[in-house]
Image (cartoon, rainbow, N blue to C red):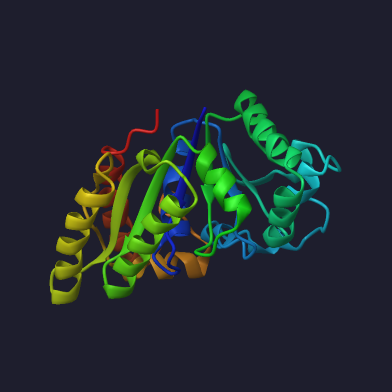
Length: 261
């Protein structure tokens, strides 16, 4: 089992979207996949059009599992074939408990290890903010992928992410990949930002691979509005279908460069 996290100390860079597509891709290969949302907004649910399940019942959150009030099967939410989600309720409160009761850290790590009996991959989706839960889950990850928006704020988020790792003694070598997101060949700012990111990554994340930049595509927002994943078999209007196919092709080429074993 591999534990894979996407992270960046900057919101709106596409972390949830990318990890959702990556997880769904592995699920289409027949792998059993779990996505744990460490984000109280549970944004990952929107990627698959199941956001109504966030509030459908109030006793199937991650916190109930950790407290021993629910079994794993009680909190799993099926989003697609082979793909399950776990939602969170109040990560700040949970983090406070993890800080005050050190034994809770062992509990959360044990429960994730227990998931290896059921899942081939566990993906963790984080908000741009951070807390004790963030530190524990990042430290427990086998592979960390940093998603960086290609603008000045995105570069600032990358630098803040590196500083956060250093301040909290999180192993920088766990960062296996850096994904530049929002590239446009017709705009100067993303090109300059990509060059700067490549330089910074070479300096701060020597063990990481900087992946080819993912181009900005309006089809992603269209799919999210409909709750459709790029790997869903659907019939869309010709324009959207063409762009969805192109996005899927780009992602498949990108995924060939990512090794999560």
